[in-house]
Amino acid sequence: MNIIIAGAGKVGETLIEQLSGEDHDVVVIDRNAKLIERLVNSYDILGISGNAASYDVQMEAGVDSADVFIALTQTATSLIFSPVLLRKKQALSTQLQECATPITASSSVFSKMNWD
Image (tube, rainbow, N blue to C red):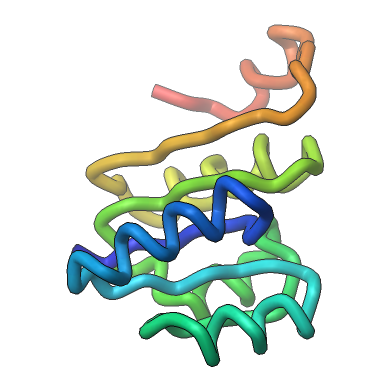
């Protein structure tokens, strides 16, 4: 499977280790370039340093061919808008999110996104 992981903290690295060991094609996105470099040198993955909520970064990561997008970032922007951009671009088979801090959003914000 083609898997994109946004966020390479403790949970992200644990998933990277597990999934790359199972011969999945893993791409990790994180803002920390040094962390990305270390992970790419440690595991059989591709790494991109950047903002996971950025459309250009998502395209560079290969969202157009991804089977799964896992958002593990600690920023609300990435957690909310990464899947929004992806849903507008294509229907992923699976999207998983973990939130380090609970997010409260008004329903009016989501109604403007025109989700099905």
